[in-house]
Length: 489
Image 1 (tube, one colour):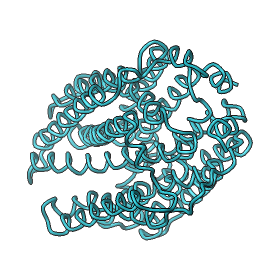
Image 2 (cartoon, rainbow, N blue to C red):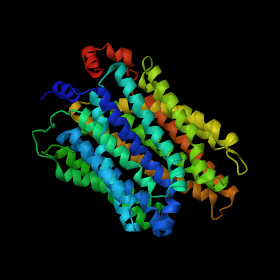
Image 3 (tube, rainbow, N blue to C red):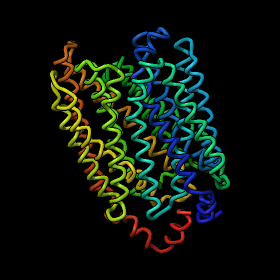
Image 4 (cartoon, one colour):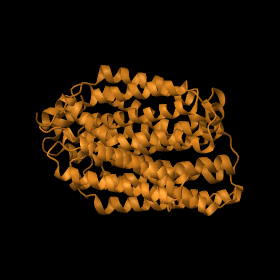
């Protein structure tokens, strides 16, 4: 099967329904990453979690999601993206339902781990389907703009939904809320997506590589998230991270020498768009997860805002991301994705630097609203372009793998960033829990988040090629009009 045939078959069902299904999927996954956080105190009370045990409500999801993303992307390429997407949606929805009915801590943690497995299957499959349905031109710019808006809106609105649900309906609804979204996405995907035939290669699947990559990534995330209990320099952390690195080095060696079909073709990293976009995405993921965490704590622990009101205060951020995503669509017709990524990172860094000026006697209007609007618009500007860049020039049969890489870089970046910047903030705060000391620690974390985004902008400037054409130029490329016409239905 040729790549052209694969792409044509993948997009034979209406791209509009594909975009709708993928948008719901991305909103659900992003919302789940943040909706549970606000409900943690009530979850601890309701199920009797210990202080350390409660962190596994988050860690169980991060471990399975981050560790299995590469495998999920490869499975989507090999066995069919629609098939893997439907499997992931079914598992995610069922795990959410079971988690909502959990009667003890072990049941909830197991449900969260199953949610992570489902997300690791559906996230790269959905993104690969979107890439195939909108290969180039203006439809691609619009599609990734919608995707980026749903991605960020889900994360931001998750805080709002989590606060309102926890306060007025009970913590179980932060799990139940995923069920109707999963069912809606299942219905749309089942009816609206006609996937290509599974892209089976000539060689047998690289089982050893899959085991090494999954174990290495999982152990890396495990080592990082456990730094809340074991310091970065402790023997436990150092040993865990050393074993993780050794497993990943072994994975690279296996991928270089295997006679089977590799989990990740290492030649993908020779594509500067893939390499640069993933490095950029890792830093953006680290900065955004950390800043979101610090601002949520600032509002609740320093200003004394309740859970529901904290959620409402994040609404301007969600709206700003939508505005930035719409701007990215409009500007994407004339400006290269690389330029939008640089501008978006620098604008978000400016917002975070402004955030770092928070004070113990501050207010939402004076310390949060202004920087929220600037940072969110910048974030919206770069979300779509980084995804489009990371999958540019990738063969259709490797789109799932490239999507899995991009999701992995964001998840690992978020875990590493939150652990590292959280440690820096805690070191600045010290043993005191006074509003002034907490404020000082959060300010340090926020300025470090801004610094990470400046580095991301430098990576985009130096690694990505200037030739990343905007939509009009891409649509004028040889063979592009036919592909763009097929993508737009």
